[in-house]
Length: 179
Image (cartoon, rainbow, N blue to C red; front, side, top):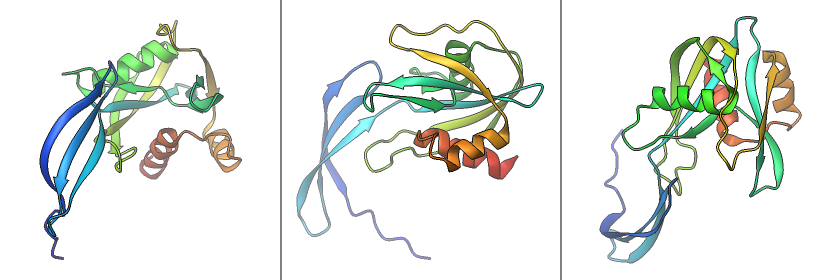
């Protein structure tokens, strides 16, 4: 298989917006035919999602209020990497902050691109087995509850459309095909 040359050549990049979580980069590009255009990119450090499992086989999920959808969504603990932070460290940090996870053995399952048409983000997915639940340490803008589910219950919730978070769905698919 022969790959074609990349159709976009970057002419310039400037930061259009920046906050703690991400930057919006404004790129100017040129196509092979000479046409120029604009591309806006959500630039992140990446993210880490953890699929925690207790010693009795239950999976730890969080039900979290999502402002944009104005709804409560069932998800696995996840969050952005801090600058210079390793994905495994971020997974453990997010698990502790959101669900109060303690102990367990961390293993990398895989990674995926959550929205590669607009962002450079890579989500690293981890499994932690034999976790225990302690006190969570929520950030000021987080409102969530911790819930436990069996594998069959998660599959049923997905089939019913009750789990809608794309990153959770992708992570569960990676987990399900490898475990």
